[in-house]
Length: 443
Length: 160
Ligand code: FES
Ligand SMILES: [Fe+2]
Picture: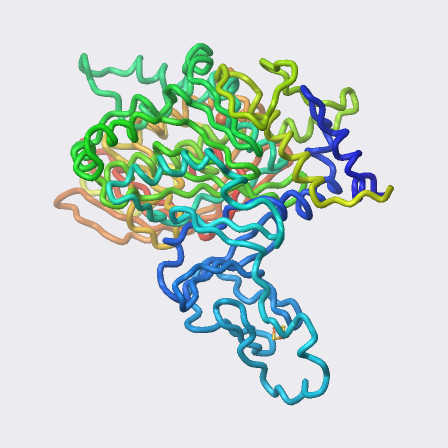
């Protein structure tokens, strides 16, 4: 029996000011409604333009659970098409990347399509003469998604034709993308290799919430970061030995509560927000020789200092990505089922900057976010325990109350103590809005 | 040991795997030279360990950290502990240089890791670069290529 479909009130009832009902994490019907409404109404990250540099290059991925192809057309623009043949539904491409030349050809009955999706040819077309094919939806070819936006190289799509426009959906939160791209002396990023792919047996929102959860690192990561610090201190080494890059990456996870309180959290409307307003775990990395000089040359000293002085920690773009500007990383949380999420962690090269920066970025990615990474193990253990624990009938609500203030207005930008759970509440406020935006009630 | 025989090299590779399966990690750490690396690429035929993502690229410090973490009181992903099991093909001896005391082996193997009700099976190939130091074989570099390195994995917590 359906409890939530066509029942906006039931959806709204799942979200209270300081707690959310467990069904948002464990109920498969809620999950399917997320795919139908939330992931169709909002702007979802697809890929980076450098993944398809030449005409005919394509990249296959998912928007929520919907398979799509990102492809560079002959007009040099990037299109996002549903990965589904208009004939019988066959996926047109299944390799993760490739080049299709001037057109896609379905492997089943050889219908072909231009790289903007338009139907090009059907073998033995006369078999459709006088059948009314012109009136069918198949005749239009591979369906494009509702809308596509290329923001400084990052491709986003909205599945629905109607909905919030890109600029009003993201607003000032785009400043985190700007900072990440501006860190290249040429103002350009390039994807560096394939992403890490890490399967999580938990709900996708647990991952998104964790990105601004500043009260867990010193607890859950004591096993990895705490042990690293102990080991380093006990190690036989000459006085004044410089910390290796790996220690610079992992040690800040053990920073005390005050550090995280003082770093600050900023929330933006529509569920976006970031930690590290004033400083972050990325603030104290050693300077890379030659980089600052390149930045001064490109931007002038004042602007170069402003760009590099901004050390935001995690920026969440609602619903399902996080970026780290100072290390050029993007993590995509792709929902698969209520209790299953694929996490893909991408890194980018700052075009024109020294390779050593990319070395640190790649190190961060594998040390913190790989399925083989100790820090990753710490986190996944907690998500999976939570996913299982929520099936207990002892309690039905999940608490997101830390530093709650009466009458919080999420349509206003706010900067708060870095340990607040306001950003999680902000996400659920947006969740409720975009879940019900296009939901028609039965009543 | 004078120059190691084929059997010495093969025994070394088997013994290394057995240490991991037995959980004799401190002994295992001693098999490595101080500037050695354990590398597990993310991509098929990957050549660059540093400027694209790898699954693992661990120096002495990082290997030691993983072993210490296994023992930790608050290492929750190791409560209960993971166990592992290697099944090795006989190693090929790809390179022998007795003059320099340098050797390379190539070993196909299956690896099983288990914890609670979960068990994963991975197919992999290990390339060991070994060096004879003060009469003992030591690992200077170990590269482990997973057959499905580009697949989406859950946790892989031990060394392969
Ligand atoms: S299913 Fe694609 S051409 Fe028939
Ligand atoms: Fe974490």
